[in-house]
Image 1 (cartoon, rainbow, N blue to C red):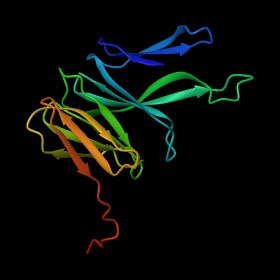
Image 2 (image 1 turned 90 degrees about the vertical axis):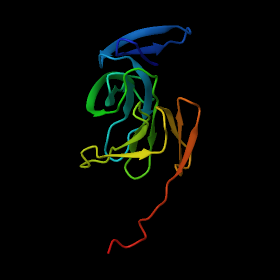
Image 3 (image 1 turned 180 degrees about the vertical axis):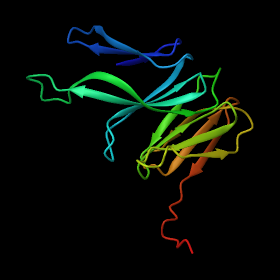
Length: 175
């Protein structure tokens, strides 16, 4: 279990058989509070990671390290969290959310207080290239993609929801 704090750390807890939570370790991530933690499975040669919004104007990609325990045929035990990259997202006050899109080699998508939807490429060699979507007139507080990854929904602080359709234009020549 992962828990973000208002002081900017992530606590890692373990659920035991006796229905209790045991504190394992914590990682101090930022000066601002953690407002969203999204887990991403390993893909495209990248380890499993967390996408984390914090109210210090950033979103952070954090690599997860697991170790195998003897006698355990499962996925292992989370033993470390290491910052891979921090990216800028206008965020200081509101509880902003982020999500993961598996399109291409993956994207971190986040709402922002400057009324835009931020989209960062997670592809190796992309240098976390940023794009953004503009439509909202007030801060964007939540984002989500559908299971097929064809629609992105963004919601703002006034309750307005915008649906964005992803269009594959790879079949069109670039001439």
